[in-house]
Image 1 (cartoon, one colour):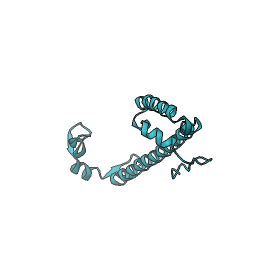
Image 2 (cartoon, rainbow, N blue to C red; image 1 turned 90 degrees about the vertical axis):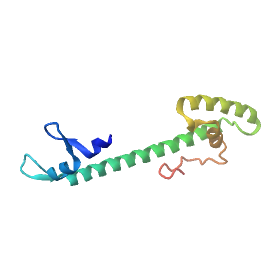
Image 3 (tube, rainbow, N blue to C red; image 1 turned 90 degrees about the horizontal axis):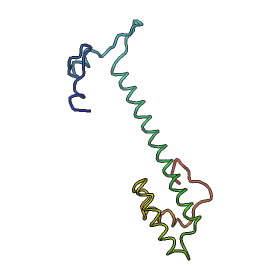
Image 4 (cartoon, rainbow, N blue to C red; image 1 turned 60 degrees about the vertical axis):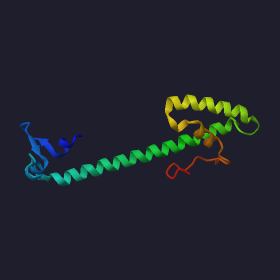
Length: 133
C-alpha cells in the first residue's frame, strides 16, 4: 500500500479525501435499519480478526514444518546412512540435498539433512506439534 493510500481515501464521488477528514466524517456509519455502527470499533474488530487468523496460520505452519523435519530425519535414519556406510551415506545426502534444495529451498541443504539424520535418539512417538518436541 502506498503512503498516499494510507493517508487518504476516495469519497463516494471518487474524490480523494484525507484520512483525518474521513475519520471525523464517517466515525459513525448509518445503517439502513436505523442504527449506526462505530467505524473505529468495526476497524479494530476486523484488525483483531485478521491478526488472530494470521497467528493461527503461523502456528499451524510451524507445527507442520516441525513434523516434516521429524519425518525427514526419521526416514534418513531408517536408511542407516551413518555408521559403517558413512561414505555411501555422505554421497547420498549430497545428492538428496542438491535435489531437495533446488526444488524446496535452503531448508533442505546438506547441513540440514545431516543434522536431521544424526539425531542420537529419535523418540518412538511423534514430537508434540505445539512445542516442536
